[in-house]
Image (cartoon, rainbow, N blue to C red; front, side, top):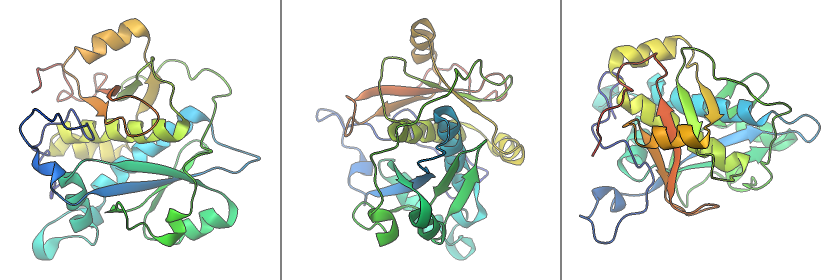
Length: 258
């Protein structure tokens, strides 16, 4: 995606799905593979609530996708545009790591964007090669992102997009944050320029909730964008998140997808 005015033309149902060996080869598998790093600020004494962290991570992905440094082409390209384009031309990968204290301060000094939730802080960085992480980020831990909600998050906010999590999966908060980011990205790809701008100007309001079993069955057959995880970590391959416009965006509607 090189412009904020044109939706990404590729199918938006499997950002990181495992290739089918019997299917037609996907050119994304031959492209150099990149990862979008996200770092969540977790202090031992005062960790953020789980849902707050998930929603903040999803908004962080949207913020970097819409940032002017990620946009443009040729002479008009922003400083992150090439990396963002190369990342989206391959399998979409996101990795969430945690930091506290001095680690967080060092990570915050690297080029990126810090997004704040109610209490959560997530910093998103331009994509890096799978084996080319900056040393300040490479040493951060992936484990230890287990977070809890002190109370049930309740119903989604009215009139904002909802990222519905699969109720059958038991994922760490870090894995769930990455999946929420995938769902937000699929929603972004489905929108035209006007809806993208409206969502951005509103501060990317959204909710992340776990669907009931009945609701999940409905969502996964509705034609809405579905994240299908590759199954490399924690869970088996399969659907993890459905992005629902919740009446805010017409383009996130139930239409058949390839």
